[in-house]
Length: 113
Image (cartoon, rainbow, N blue to C red; front, side, top):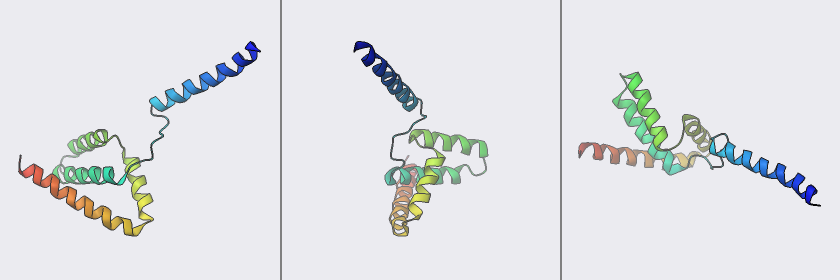
């Protein structure tokens, strides 16, 4: 009886350890993706650095990477959010209003520094 339990328990424990290791290593992602508020923040900041560093491609690339790291997202997730949200045209109006509002906030912060 003990041997049978052990034969079953060991593979289950190994599977759980592998699953945990894959999750911690970034291979598995159990998050629900990019939410609207995070998209607004990322998109607004990307827009500003795009404008600011348009003539400096290497610096632009570095700044974009910093933004993605700051919000723990990547370009693939950003594009997936856009693709998913395109299905609901009415939702875009609200998102773009938030993006514009966030851009104004960021510009105001930049001017008051």
